[in-house]
Length: 101
Length: 238
Image (cartoon, rainbow over all chains, first blue to last red; front, side, top):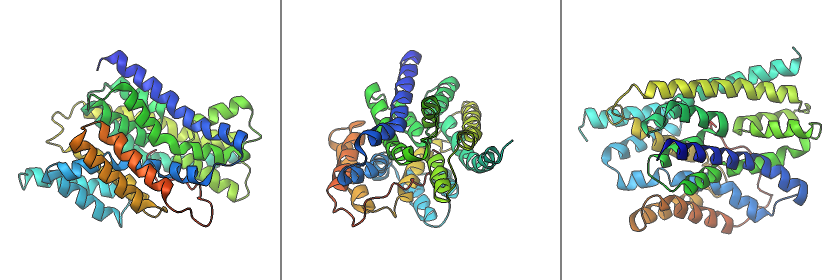
């Protein structure tokens, strides 16, 4: 992708993001409240989108990434995100450089 | 300085510190996926939403159609609609120009803290709001650039396992939602949809297919007795 294309994508993404930050205000001043089923669907959007960004690498990737994700998931049950990230990263490094996966 | 500004700076500084590593991560991964340091800086300055910036980076690396990158960023940021709806009645004192500026900075912790302040019975002032916002915004930008600069010196990302950081980061965000109602059916549907889509249709369509599956399942789940809340999602870097 050339530099100019990347620039326009970033600009469009910035406008789209700003639209989400103004959008609720515009909606609420017109509609008062959101229909509950719509609100429930909107609430689920982040989890639904974000899942698609790691699930395929877990199920179709190598054992290095699988071990890293498993280690991170276990650590995340008790520790903050940064510790989780460090644990997963350490597991991936170990899998590649120690176990040779 | 008035009390609101000092409180805003203090509260924002904590958020800025905890977001700094994620800004560095964003910068490093951006360069790893072929973006320049300037592109990374532009994304942090103009989009200013950590998780969605990383989504964009992930897709930039995969030769995905431009509109799909923009749509995916839009989808991840869609939750902000709930924030600006919830905050509307607390900012009646802002002028239209102040509102327009304030909405640009409406990230997860900004909403969370603003909501907490109004629940404590404090008035939401522009001086508190902007002090809190800017003390997060500028470090976010600075650390993104530092991360990008650092990332451009690392060399092969596989040796340093930079490539596993994104999936881990996204999985961590998802696990952070696990106490929200409807979490398990939504994520299971999205997981099945994305993996099946990845096998039979191919990348990048697995993103849209999985997301649509998850959102549809969430919409069809029984409604809770009380209306769903607009609690901010727990997300460190966004």
